[in-house]
Image (cartoon, rainbow, N blue to C red; front, side):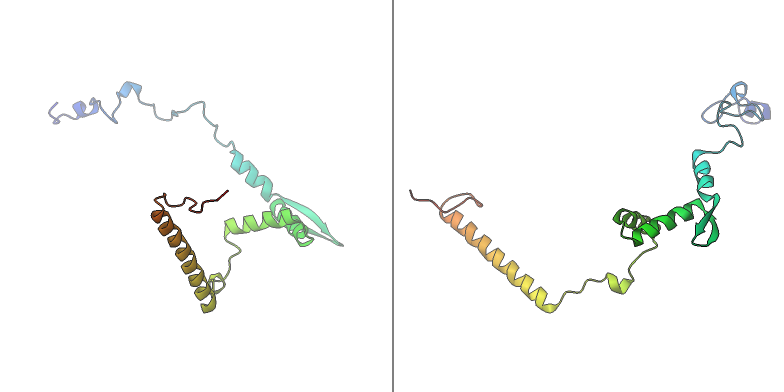
Length: 153
């Protein structure tokens, strides 16, 4: 087994090189009882069923459309009449497909300077109250967060 003879290389067995007797023969499948050729998967069957065309009557004319398109039209018409579930379903599908998005300039949140100043003042008051409570607790030798007021009977 010095590698000089080609017949020795064919007989080598190891990882990724099974013995020739146990290898699949040419034209033989590794899964003979698997899905037969030509059989459709469930996804393919559903896709074909959704894209089959039907005739839909609208007022006095007949339109031809796919079943999935008809389902979307029906849900859209229900949503326009005020059905909240149909509207929610449509918006969920549109969001997943990335169809309905706000333009970048409408996605920004604008806060006025007065609102920022009011929020800062409120935060400062909350911190001041918290610090007073902590200082009172330290003065009374009580753990922070405990009620430092005592009731007199």
